[in-house]
Image (cartoon, rainbow over all chains, first blue to last red; front, top):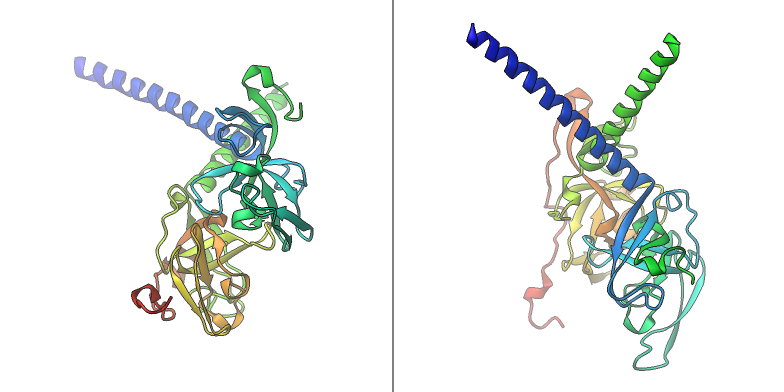
Length: 167
Length: 171
């Protein structure tokens, strides 16, 4: 008798555990879809986008819709997968699109030498706002559009810089 | 009132199934159809068939690939297209290009792809080495048609990949 009662209790406990796990799993799927297809917060840090972004780190909101529709253009700050290390993401500004001619100072710290390049089809030219401390298309060349992962919408943290990036 | 809540229930179910399916297909594995004959005879050996293959996404965590892996990647000249080719060179390898009579080194973070059917394949011999970040998954099995179901083998005897770094006088 007792054995039967125990079995029934275990079954209901197992069922409840399964239900709760299913809810958590569904929530994680929703989170994944929202982060990958709608918008996601990202933490960025480093000197390459001074003065637009801080050295010690900002939390930015990146939207993931425009780049799929091809609506990324010059002047946008974008999240890009690094062509040098695919496990890292970079935050840089798009300076030129496919077909444009880019004229840039190769190494502003040491010389004034300038180069001009035409951006090939399907690629974009990205540069950090702080050209003295940024490793970008001036070093690794134009990057394929397929590496763009999102466009930065606004800053969320620190609060005194809250809002659009052009202040 | 009854049909209203029934409709809502059905919508919720479809939405949930859609979310789960999308997450699984993005993070774990998905099935894609192969078009074109650039990977004959491994895929689409006849010109009329269209193979379906299983693409796994676990490799996108650490980006560790081996020579001979077949991968799906976004095209460097058009981000909306995806291609399926075999990895011939990984970062640091030297690739000999007979048609250009030249040797070039695959840069850091890039890889060199070629189709098995070199006659009709648009690959790194035209657009050069491409960033690993463009890879969207690795092909592990053929799932359709049933007579060709099975693992996709790594073939590493594509072409002599000269390891010229062994020759001291080359530079």
